[in-house]
Length: 169
Image 1 (tube, helix red, strand yellow):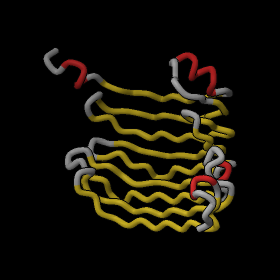
Image 2 (image 1 turned 120 degrees about the vertical axis):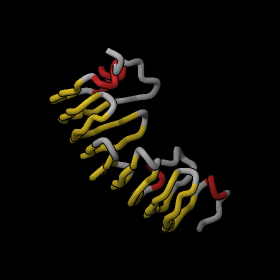
Image 3 (image 1 turned 135 degrees about the vertical axis):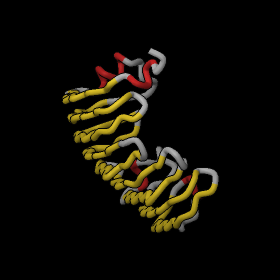
Image 4 (image 1 turned 90 degrees about the horizontal axis):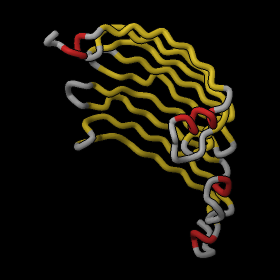
């Protein structure tokens, strides 16, 4: 018909269990390293231009695009008006990240985006440029990508290494 794919019905009920993401990465020719296990569920209904649904996932020892995420838990939902990340958490050798927030499609607006990252051992992430130190970051953001507003808090302690030319902060 004239509506084409926009009017097509969507009804997806998918459970997935990737025991090794490396195999999936090879299948889709991912350019960076992927590994670990990831399980989850996707429930999606509606039309192609206005789907609604929920994605939930959990993983262990996850490396995504070369980034070591470790243990991962996430839940997000989408409807005609917005995409909402209820929670994203990862905890691994490199530290932890917690994030959430929403994006409203019609106004292209971010709402209550929050990110908390803790890196207790920067040496593990800095490829030899830092040999000690820790970092804590907290951010909140709202508004459009062109005109965002929010807060950023950064707490770095005990930094030292070649990236600082031998100086200690």
